[in-house]
Amino acid sequence: AQSVAQPEDQVNVAEGNPLTVKCTYSVSGNPYLFWYVQYPNRGLQFLLKYITGDNLVKGSYGFEAEFNKSQTSFHLKKPSALVSDSALYFCAVSPNTGGFKTIFGAGTRLFVKA
Amino acid sequence: GAGVSQTPSNKVTEKGKYVELRCDPISGHTALYWYRQSLGQGPEFLIYFQGTGAADDSGLPNDRFFAVRPEGSVSTLKIQRTERGDSAVYLCASSLKGQGFSNEQFFGPGTRLTVL
Image 1 (cartoon, rainbow over the protein chains, first blue to last red):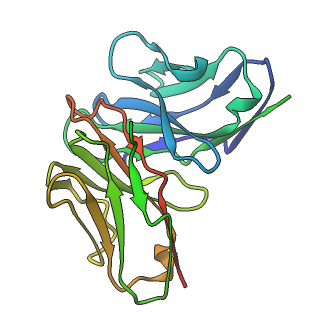
Image 2 (image 1 turned 135 degrees about the horizontal axis):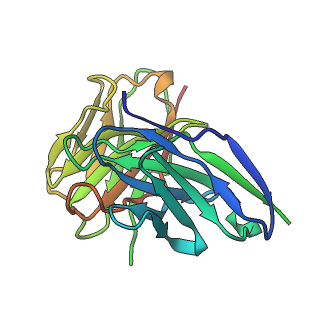
């Protein structure tokens, strides 16, 4: 079965420190990979995506993500966390062949402490 | 510009009743998705429209759920004979149709459905 795993329910980091939110996937073929963020009382917002090419992709608000095909991972990173980064983060996978279903992970809550 | 809008924002109904949830996508977005999000979970795919047609409805849980998009813009998710297990936030998203599904989705604020 196709799936997306976010192994950490919550990540705690101090402001100014680097952060990593982990995502691994089990999907056939070469899917497209996304990160979305959900702030309190707001809808899901797109952060970044990997389609093809460079394994390190850069997105909004200083976030970046590293695609690792051999480990089927797409971890979200930021060199220096801000308190305002505290939110719920979702990894998602979309097919590039066959089927239209986008699969989301269960989400990781990021808490940045001042 | 205007984003994806969903109405109502909250819907409380009784078990066995019929409900309709509406989604207005971003103008020009031909792709439209419905998801269901339960507490502590990620969005769960329900159905995908490309234009007026449902290209993939494999996520609809049973035949009580149905969705339409008659003119290729506004979509309505319809739930018959609601059950308490249908309580969740229903999300709508739209995107440009690109190669494969490489385009990011733009999400609405969701409709919180509570079935008593």
